[in-house]
Length: 197
Image (cartoon, rainbow, N blue to C red; front, side, top):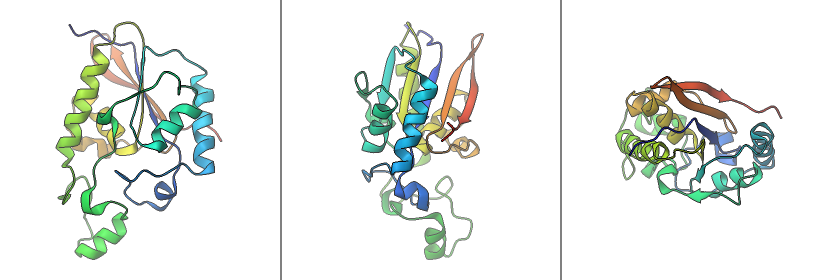
């Protein structure tokens, strides 16, 4: 039986060295910077100990540490579906570097092949599994601590758009977004709320 959680809260991890430099960070398990740790604490101040029926995190330390610093380390469960996009051979590379190497000034991760990694549709399938898991929760809100691209794709899939439409939903490090319902229609209530430093 499908239930409807009140809201799904999406919390992107704080700043890392690679998010600052624009390097694609999928499988690489990279730590938060001191500024990223502060962003995580700031997200925690906004959440203010809000009770969640389910708290899930990517297994990557940048997401888990954000979850812990936000105050939910004692209740979090790992869900591998929340891992960031597998960028394959583009892991650790910036868009500018990839465009130069390929001699393709319009290359994007959203439109072009990802050798050795995931297609955007595959990331969308993981997002769909997360949505189905959240919809099984009947007794309160759900929180997902994860990464920029998977959360953007999750937002797009929540409102019935293809995974590629996640490119239209900018999401900063440390940002909080809220998905929910208007009557029975899935909607985005708030998007990319950035905690003050």
